[in-house]
View (cartoon, rainbow, N blue to C red):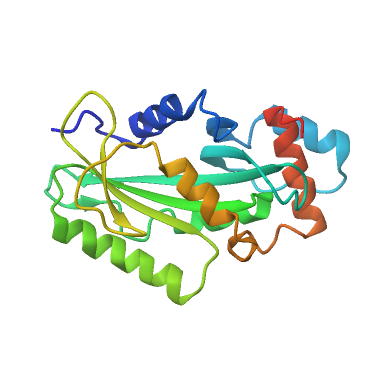
Length: 216
């Protein structure tokens, strides 16, 4: 039995693992953009209607060596957890999280990521069928998104994962290389959010930076 049984526990565990690491510089969890803090920052600096409201599961802030917009490289991550329900069916659907991740583009995240996490009880065949379907959608539509599909390993006191996407790894390993994997992926500017140069989107990005107290 996996030590992590739901999405919230997984997000908390990833946050605890990444917090204090040199890369990413900082990490945030469950950032609610419907809070008064975000609205206050927006209303002080920008005119017009407030942007759509949503919650971001994880935000990783790296140093952008290109300083394309400024020194921060912001990656928004949508997490979805898959397991068997009481009726023996897998929930949620394979395409869950795609719409939320795409919506992150409106807020100026440099990188967008969708992370599907599968319970340790689910078979290789099941995880492959779900992850391959999602990966096909992302690749064929050329969506600028880093897709990660992992299954929890039922061992040890720390998170160990078997990777199914973007590449398959037979052995279960830790989270150590996930952040670097994402950073390296978005170092390619062609993989970044195509809306990031839009003026209003950059306003929203500035509001998020102010809310998260990112000084660069």
